Length: 121
Image 1 (tube, one colour):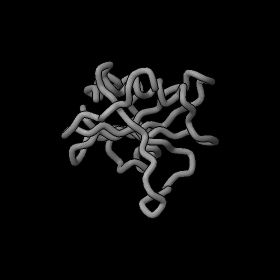
Image 2 (cartoon, one colour; image 1 turned 90 degrees about the horizontal axis):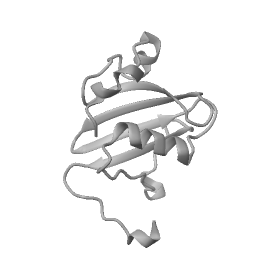
Image 3 (cartoon, rainbow, N blue to C red; image 1 turned 60 degrees about the vertical axis):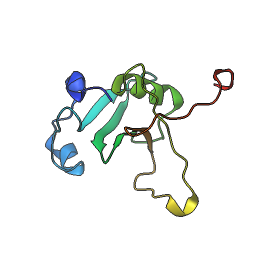
Image 4 (cartoon, rainbow, N blue to C red; image 1 turned 180 degrees about the vertical axis):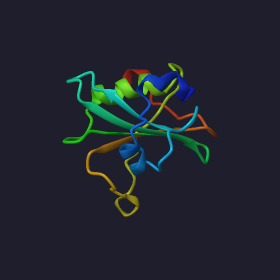
């Protein structure tokens, strides 16, 4: 993941939003951000962290789930060009839904993410 200070122009400092995100504006590895969508300029709320061997970025919108273009936008902003991040679809018994309009990107620090042959992607 990029040094999140590179994204300080999007960093959230509103105490009301920060209260929902732990009350802290973050650092180079953690933070809450508001980014205008490439689709309609509406707000994407992004929470980014680097904990327990994983980069994690959650992306939400107020009235709908972020779409592919918005998730790609966030991937380009928060991850370096040479980094692969994934969305996970876990077994139903492991699924936790805290917010109905949020999607997540993950990147492991410990191992490279295996990719299918390029002709498939």
